[in-house]
Image (cartoon, rainbow, N blue to C red; front, side):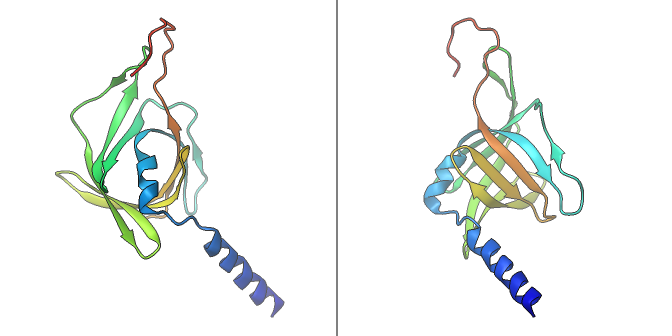
Length: 146
């Protein structure tokens, strides 16, 4: 009986500690995000030490885009015309990013969102852990990056 109460207590504690995402928090998504790791439901986590691309979000009034960008040594980003439309959706105490392209639609739940960190979870319970990043200028030419 003690084990049952212990499990219930831990479960309630876990649910109570989950971050509630508010509409005001969504502006924190805007900008460049670098993936740090991916956690799988039943597999070993995958850490990313070096990334060739970042995710760029631009969302206003709960609509916007996500685009893959590739940082360059001079602090600029290499981009193409491909992007995903994004709509922010709130259901009960949860927030979702609904993506769409010409070819498909999918959703990810926002598990955690701060000015520096973002965790998204897809329908397969795979979590994507991001950290906020900026342009990197390795040429050290004294110019500021945009």
